[in-house]
Image (tube, rainbow, N blue to C red; front, side, top):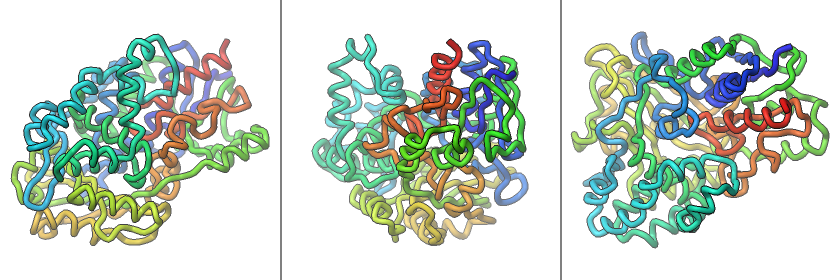
Length: 472
């Protein structure tokens, strides 16, 4: 009998398999698609020779992951590229640059320079510790007691709304816009409690770890994880769609890299009715509408310095970012959406033919939205890069339904595995988190703490729970 079967080969499923294999367990991973990777896949979406990231593209959480950093992934060809500028947030007539140095970043914030240094300095100095706490299940350890003052200070800021913290901490538009754009990665209205925490952690990550891309595409992360799993004796089988427990080989443990909806469908009466009712109350969040372009030249940004940025946040002021996310929260696609954009081929020549380029972007939309956001996204790019449309050779359009077809965990286009608001941050999908009432069945997707992102930590923590409960 196999010790463990992991269903799903996203970064969390692969991380769970690796952790189990490290403990000497025989592990097999089953993947429904013909390629592995989940949210870390790459493909030629537009034209031959143009390599695009199907979902995730920029990886501050991968390089900051407390688990991934223990693995020799570079041995299997994984290389992260750090653009000269991690992030730029354009404004009409100017732009805000998030640089690796928080001092250099603050120097560009005018009257808010000192406030930014006061806010970020203690976070960046303690980045490794805070990453371990923020991206982990809620718990009390000797380290949390030792750093209780730091955690209390951070917690009081993180629990606030992004709009509230930005208005109280900063006086001028650039610093407020920078924090708002970072917080918008929470995929919820910026008036919601806890959105400030997302913004602070991503700012800290940019300074401490950068916002890198993987050379050759995000697929290389998944490929390296599989290669390492193989050295530990683990195996993976593609084109193995699991629709019920009858579709998996007999094992002591089943670890599901799926969201609650799929877990309910697959496990049937293997889970008690009370727990199944809890899972039905799990809430999915907003979706995304994604575009990829093949370009005949780089984006003609109004400020050429923005060609040094791996990532750009396009929406303008804090008020504009907040209005975009509030509209989505009210189930209306924004007329002027907040656009997250990456331009990887400027730093990675493997992404496009010589002289050509790729571009990746998405905006948030209501879950399952059918509204075509192509013109609205491209209008936001044109706003800061006049003439952009003239450089388009081809485009790939992915609606929320298309995204779910590529990755069944993205229900209605929700790339976060469920709403990440305060009610579903630490205790997701239920108070049991990774465990279920059936000691053979565990869940390790981004529907568990610490939510979405390419960091593998949901899988790592789920595997540890399974090792404690099922292999004692």
